[in-house]
Length: 79
Image (tube, rainbow, N blue to C red):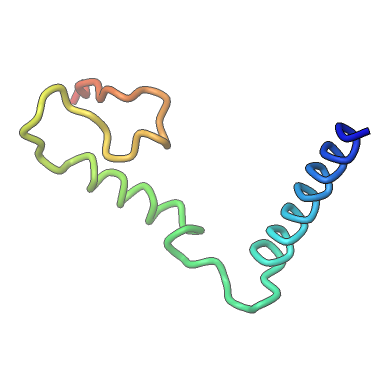
């Protein structure tokens, strides 16, 4: 009996959290727009290229934002 109550409460909480997140962030009930820096792919690529061009003194070189990449170690470019 207790497991049903706990499971039901957990599922209910997750549903309420999802609905609140969707309504507030996606439907933008408080107004606002998505910033250009997020929606513009060209800006994102230029910023990423700038971050990767920064000199590092540590070894081995790593990417500045490893979450957006599957490979954490930067490979030398063939340029």
